[in-house]
Length: 402
Image (cartoon, rainbow, N blue to C red; front, side, top):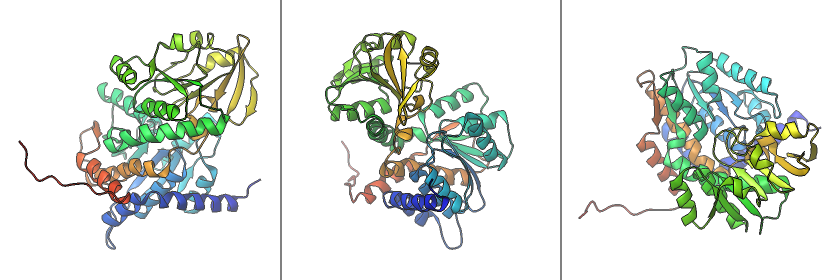
């Protein structure tokens, strides 16, 4: 059994490694902080993110800028215990243990709420929604990391139920064009490979959804030699996938020949009973969307009450006499089966978080209660930081046009 001190040491090494690949973050701290003033001095932050080495870089940066922090996980199975131990050793209030039950998961969110944060950062909007149920007047504003969470918060806004202003980090171009596409594309294939060691060349991979996540996953699967089919409900996205050279099909047809199915939609029960019953023997089912409801897991479990644990994160179910392999219990394969996004791409997303949190701290109490996009000047500034960190220069306009 690994000792706590060993976990702290492992976590510190992982944190330091990620930090070397996320130099944008240090640059922001340097640019915004002075010996006499820290931009987040005394601000109480409630954070609900995946507990990874990249998140540790963000959390320590926010602490360095003066924030007081309470942290919980956006997913019970994405917690990296070495990182959790490292952050606790750094005096961060952290409420998270890998594999925690649903009750523990929600209790840990309540602990963050009891911390009485002024600004809340979330990934999936679970903490935001809980705050709306247990409203606390000390909440001034928030940020939201991902597509699924922004969708849920937009619904609150449309229903005039939103209780504080929120910046949709996901809507920044320096977030969705890179994190959602390249980050999720690489890390999803990484999670699939680590979990199954499947040989991808020649395999029929079915990508459900062709948004930014689906685009990235389809591209990386094709790059590894898989034969990729895309399923979509949006005709424009379906046309785009077709012109990118993918087979585009109804899921009802694709389920007859697919070897690997990856959901990338954020929608409810994309893969259902009528699809699962028609699949061939030995298929892999996995999810790259935020929540574990894109695959009808209840139906699969109803068919086999005693699945076999083949290896970590692979459960074998017998459905209609055929083997169905459910990966990562239907949760995000890139975080449960691997380590999530690489540090370089998370630097962009977390730079958006940092600068948006500072922006909200400056605007305390002056913003309308609605969902905002990341301010354009922040989006552009992050792209400049990123190019600089990669040693890339760009031309300047001469100011002339026709």
